[in-house]
Image (cartoon, rainbow over all chains, first blue to last red):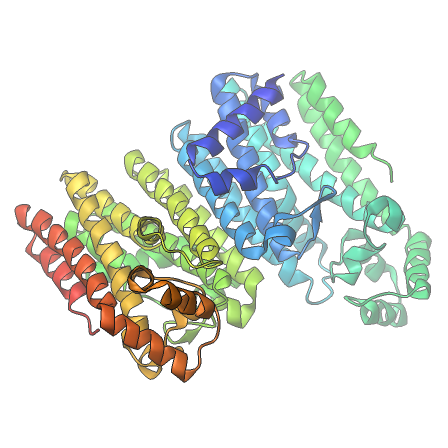
Length: 299
Length: 299
């Protein structure tokens, strides 16, 4: 119900843009899971201000996905052709800018602490996207660098949503923010794992696609660390290239041998346990269950 | 002197991003004329708040140019290779997003009326950019639509700068905003005229480039209006295509015949006269002279 109100609020923001062409583009945007809005509303209850803030954050998330799809040259988003694929990069870039700027003008009409948190989150998010692209140019073996990048790319807006909810509800922004951060990072780690463990039919993209695109996610970093000199060399030689069946097999076998997927999953689990403990202490049963579900995704 | 302070403030904002890669990209951005900052500081005097606001608006302007260059597939900006040409579209898009979001978080720390004006201006600016692209797909003969598009694309941030200056100085935002708006629209009209009247060596791009790119600027709209049915057909057949010397000659001759450039220039002049009158009434001699200079550019 509350999420329905958020959808209406987003529609209302679009209508205020007062432009038929833009409205037509809106209709082409896939509606996501609205995780950020859900989280905020669970923390803050569905006051008018909470609904407005949730709608603003979802607009920002949509804007970031539009630019993200241009950057990743993605052809689809949630099974639907992406805006950049259908209308070209120009439309995707500008529609993103329109959404961002509309969201920011709405933010200045609400709680300013939230406005500051959300706009700073977008700065970090954009820096994260840029690092994601840059780090894919060579094999990155630095775990800390990788975790910082996915925190920025994936977790920072979830963290901001949780903090905003807490501020609106008069709860502790730091605990809730930490919860959101851990949730986001764990989500990305599990996503990275799925790219390795699931078959390409389930994923809807080629298996080991991250590595083919140059992205050395956590299991690859752990694998590199475990391999001997000649194994390291072999792995680096495959980085960022199309892989044949034999190469795929080699990577998977080596990962199994050294337990790289398990090690990655253990880190995600650790983050989730911390999140669960934080929210347990606040008696937020629902938030505890959201965190638990995250780690129980099929992998 | 005040402009120097603005440069330092922009540098300071960049340093706060606390990222070496981003700082390195900043050094590659060409420094423009800083027209918007100049205008704001002339209206408001160089208080700390005015300098901050001017720096924020220049960051926003830089962000919009980054995205604009991606959209226009521009290879250079002010004689220097553009970021998209050197580092690729991805860097240009994300650097733009970083600049925008940093500017917005800074805006929320200042005058909120200004934050609202500036962020709404960015929405309009992005809508204007999108319309510019869309309108180039077919020959647009609607003068009103064209003027609305260039108002958004070019004038809206100049208008916002003038308004912001007026608010900070306790002057009348409406008069100053109107001045900025007219200045911006007139600037774009003169720019469009130069694409027709100057040779390609002076312009640094092929002559009649706008029309080749599908952009039917004011002189083309007036020409279309003046031509008979067969002339109209001839003009439409050339729209959005590479032109040979004979076709270029035909367009220029027809424009001369119907005084299309003069008619366009007359409109720019009218806008400038209104701007001059508005600022004359406020005894803003310097702003009057800025407006006059605009219309005295070589054409």
